Length: 115
Length: 112
Image 1 (cartoon, chains in turn blue, cyan):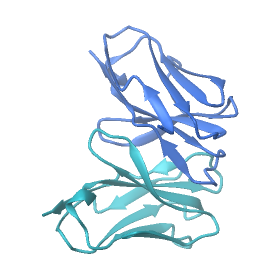
Image 2: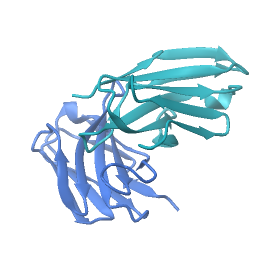
Image 3: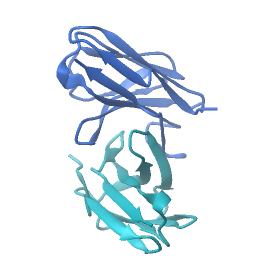
Image 4: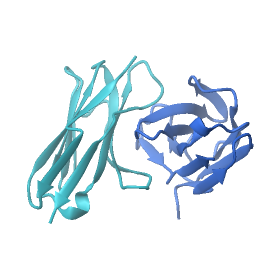
């Protein structure tokens, strides 16, 4: 039973399209995150939600909009996709916003390719 | 702003060797630290978590330590195996932040 699951696993789309990536965790965690791993493999935080409230919003284009319908779900919607958005996007969760109990648990990633 | 470096960037060793991976933070005030493993094209698997009150954690052949005075962590892998080949990432949460900051990773190859 997957703890943090993301869909889709792969996403190939054309420039200018709008797409969404979904994430669900069944760990009962309060905090969820979106990370981006670029071509150089650096992992950088994009957003963090704690109990459905946005607590971190790094310098990310406003074409990216996270939505948390409940604390078990954090979806990422991307408008007007650009070539530079191609990357692997990881969802993660933690018991609290500091990862005090058990640290972070990551999903398997969504590889987005914009053509 | 917290920055993380990992040394070496890549490492290739014969099977059976003991090895040490290093991780260093520009701000030594680390609240907790986590080591992950990432296989090619895969997600991150948590290996060890060192919480705020701890200095060391062990799991099987893995041992991680954190020196809070210097902001440095080491991951020790004993008796390495080909199955240990992967990229190892450290991530730390500083006392002021709310998210983990990741290092660039060490790419490990264990040769049979």
